[in-house]
Image (cartoon, rainbow, N blue to C red; front, top):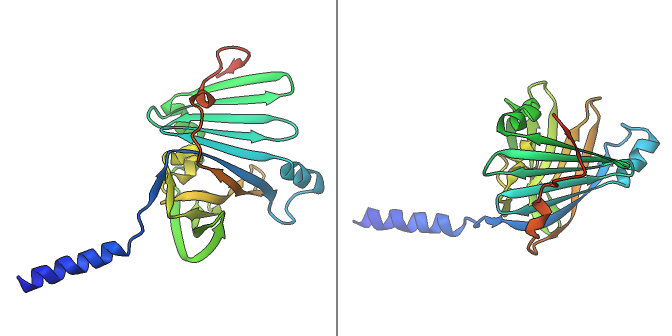
Length: 211
């Protein structure tokens, strides 16, 4: 009996040291965009600095808006159905692509077979959150770094598909362009106020449908 109570006490002490992870199911987060130092010409770098990425999360829905001087793109994803809609605007031209579950997976096939390594010893503070480093290695050997806040986790991790296995909210990450150049996204603001449900409405007109 003595050993039983000692075991219970040990478990309670361990649990008391574990920080509860908060699920964020309503938020807006803004990211600044920059090029990896010295990898892109001045015009491209300036265009990236003038671009922004805003992510909206509400329950099982997410929306990521990428706004640049030359185009805008919105990705609306529903976690419960595994489907997505991509909206693109180039001047007065508007295009819509609908992705069912299989097409969504095809859209992200470059992340199939990826491995995630958590680097707990490397941390930084972003927006007041202690963030841990993780490395994502793709099938082609590419390695992308990110930092995530382990104290919070979004209700929809797949606003970036490669985040689906990350145990926290990613506040800084790299993406790799088709030319091999890397772009960095760093969170500059997070707003925990409720997001309007209409933010995730799919337009019914004004867009040319692409297959």
